[in-house]
Amino acid sequence: MNRSTERILTTHTGSLPRTAKVVELLLAEQEHPGARKAELTAAVREAVAHVVHKQVECGVDVINDGEQGRTDYTVHVMHRLTGYEGPSAPPMGAGDDEFPELGAQLKQFASPFQHRPACSGPVGWKDWPAAQADIDTAKAAMKGVKAADTFMTSPSPGQIARYLKNNYYPNDEAYIFALADVMRREYQAIVEAGFILQLDCPDLAMLRHTVYLDLPLKEFRKIIAVNVAALNHAVRDLPPDRMRMHVCWGSTMAPRHTDVPLRDIVDIVLTALPQAVSFPAANGAHEHEWKIWREVKLPPGKIIIPGVIDSTSNTVEHPEVVADRILNFASVVGRENVIAGVDCGFGTFAGRVQVDTKIVWMKLAALAEGAALASQQLWKKAA
Image 1 (cartoon, rainbow, N blue to C red):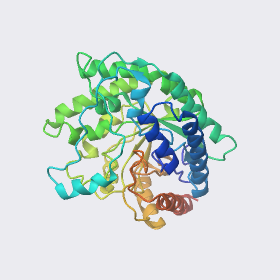
Image 2 (cartoon, helix red, strand yellow; image 1 turned 90 degrees about the vertical axis):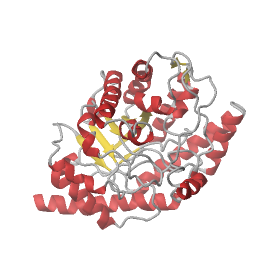
Image 3 (cartoon, rainbow, N blue to C red; image 1 turned 60 degrees about the vertical axis):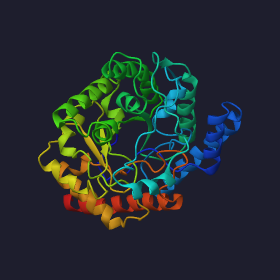
Image 4 (tube, helix red, strand yellow; image 1 turned 90 degrees about the horizontal axis):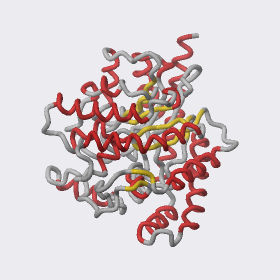
């Protein structure tokens, strides 16, 4: 993975806005599988080529396929793996009880893709060609593109288990390690195709306020330690410098007053094998957490990818704000250990639009401009 050796590099978290055509065809695929598959494949290829071009145009250095062909970043695996043939589980809550007005507002952003069955049988691959097709489409779109590097996302075992609950294995640990053994194939294929593998691990933070808020912190830490162990088991044969991971507290416009502090989990997160760790640091609940790195020592070889752009707000950050956020992190971990990122995905769920598509590209351009400003200061000082 490239380090910021000459300037601050930029990237984002993975998902980018999908075209209306892609969303329409993804819905059609959900309702009538295979009926318009050729149309969907063509629309996804066109959409991937578009978002690759837009990322380069905005000045983003480490780019991806924008997750254009997936309904979201996790539960698309239910169509590719065995064990998820049962009925849909109840949807995850959105805080309606505590904040009914906010809950009503968030319903307008709800994704139309809500089918999330629990695991009711042994997990294994039933449609590997679909996963390989994703990789091939992304690889084809990157040909001839000038970028510092490219990445591709895949959900961690713990994240899959968070969304698709266990009704088959004797306990959650057995389920998560079974997922680790199965998903290992996708992780390896992504790296072998030349991409940086981004493992999406929101479970390491989100499980706290969505499932285990009443559990003592000590017990919660034990749970996520198992999730990290399963992740490490799955990627044990892959080079750390071709992997990064994303940890977050959610991609919605939430109050975040029950988010677990980064300080309470960061030591466990840093035991994961991927070289780089991406996390939100631009929203009002977590922007201050750059200060924890004054005491938390970054292990040798590790890189951080703090979010310096908020992915839930339609405000376009001023480049100087972006630069200031980058400079804060560089001051405590070193400029070469920082890549500027985005809090979370802009297109986490197909059909859910929180940030106007045009504004997304403006925000990514501001990210690149802010990184350039920060680079001028950081490398001028060192000259």
